Image (tube, rainbow over all chains, first blue to last red; front, side, top):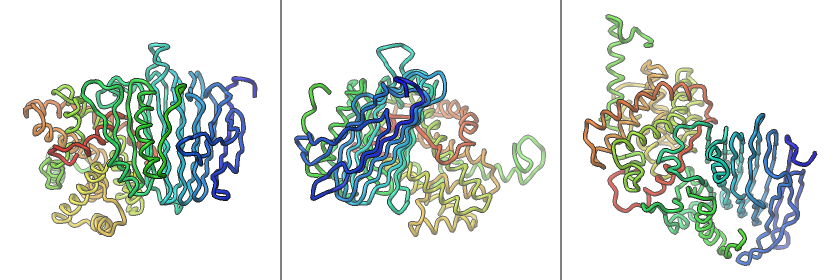
Length: 286
Length: 241
């Protein structure tokens, strides 16, 4: 595949498991442009956590790209998967790009899968489908942050995308479906600037915390809804998912880092309640 | 448009009874408990998302659009399943809708009103399918979402799917507007004007969703979603949501 060529088929498979009491990355298969090197243990507040950063050597998502990501966390293991930088979905004049993710959490496992913000450039078409299978006693923190285009680059960028579809579906290991959601934004959606939709904000996030009901109740109790009337940088709140699936953090903000601030506030509580570990200070360069 | 005689034509006594019953089932005073819900309006007012008649119209418009693309799709599928006698497909529509509902008050609104609706209908007319569905709700075998109950009852009464869709959308709009009367400075004339205007979108919404599969139920209203979370944490409130 030539550099920056469209129509790439990327594949990534990550498997974490508990070996001699330690969580390790035991399975790694990758096809460029998706790349993971090795798991590192650099979280000072949770030193047992293997951390993988997904690197895309393709410079962003182009038309015709097809990505497949599979993450599996074995019984009792923990892991953190993130991405190296913003996921840029480039302008397209033909075709579309897609990403299909499967995430499996076995009994007692814990995964934080928090990719960086997705920026949908104008005229881009991107479909992201995530299928999750999670055991009743496992915890998954997963979500997508979306920025409405390169807002400082061009006036037509803000929600100038052609189509963005972000869908997630959650099942128990026996196949019972417990939660599903699809966010669909199409070009020319007349409601984008309604006060009930974006209210002039440019970034939003839907962050799932799939966790047992007792943990969910403690997290919800601690998270303070933020919805100040005096034009805050970000608003957010936590809602209960159906079928005892867990919680959902909804956040809307001016810039992606404002939304990320709300995510970190939630993330710290989730980690403390689910794993008894806190969150380290954020790096200055993030 | 009507299957059996209908408006505009003379005579057609069955058409007249049909219309009368449509009106009865569309009445906002139908005792199923929807008066306890504002569909997020209470939080929308407290946070300034809605502040006057114009922003209220805008809010109703948005909720109708969202509802059509979620509940409306499930309603149409359940209606078709009821006509086809496919009870399994009714249950699928019920659980697919429920597993997309975020927020405990939203879940409660959907299922508490759904169950009360089924109980009410069974008091006034027999419907074997609805009776079976209510039995499954009581046995925790299905969640019991309101649009599914409406679809079963209306299909049983010979109401076609576009009429059922209109009735469902009307009920949502009138629920919000009757809550508005109790929550904000607005009079009955303004709410009627808003209702009249908002109803203008129903045909477009139906056309947009009638061919969608259950998997295609979708939404996009991030601020509304935060409002849903906001309401459960508010201490002073009149409505369930």
